Amino acid sequence: MAVCLAVMSEEVQDRAPGFRAMAVLGPLPDLPAQRQPRRPVEGPQAFLIVSSPHQSGSAHFHFVDQFQVAVAGSGRVGKHEIRQGSVHYANAYTPYGPIVAGADGLSYLTLRNRIDYGGGSMPKSSALRKRGDGSLIAGRPRAYYWDYDPPHACNETVAGPYDDGLEVIRQLVGAKGDIAFAAPQGGGGQIGVVLAGEITEGDKRYPLWSCIFADAGDNATGLRAGRDGAELLVLRFPSPTVSLATVYECYNDVAATAFLNG
Image (cartoon, rainbow, N blue to C red; front, top):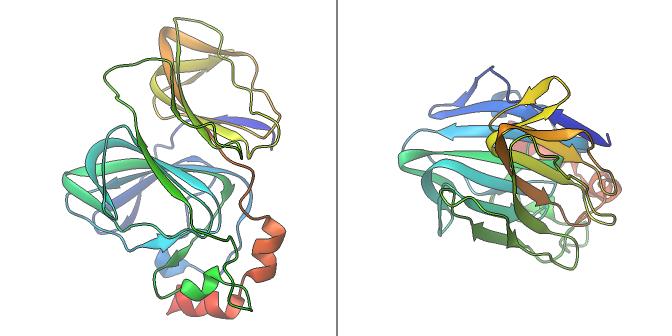
């Protein structure tokens, strides 16, 4: 999948008491009660999670690299305080959390350049992070936290660029202006999130929280800002932490089944 655009689904899924989800790109993760071991696959994934006040999920990891962007409310990820404008990044197999909503609740987008149907809670599923010889599949854990200031819209580099292509950019485009959206060669592709205004492609309109995905080396052409302009948050993924072939090779169906169904 080279380039794709999507608006947020109007369908709301109740995932657990106090948690709702809406898909943007690709499928939602499997519900825990229905989950069977499913390996990650190629293709982008983006969805919104809305957490009620003081709700908490367990610390966990995923089999793919991912960003999370807080879009409303406040809370924390582990010991890190987050608010609207906070960006969290974690490599594949890097544990993080728990994510705890504050008194005003917490809404955040999860964005991935590969589709992950589940993940592993910690410490129960820590064995899924290791090879048969006990070494970590993805090496040293890697996670970052950054913030941008939503009320003060501007063109800025929020984070990076890192040597492996990891970067976060805030991009403003004036009314009906052309939008440049080219993913650099050698990275892991990029996802753009509409933070304000809308973007258009011909007669199609992509409003708030819509997402654009471009694979590494690809360019989304024919995009323009709406009549009130557009603000994008561009999330550039690094070169993949691990290949899907490695994930498949190391994925332990027995251990995964015990975790997912236990």
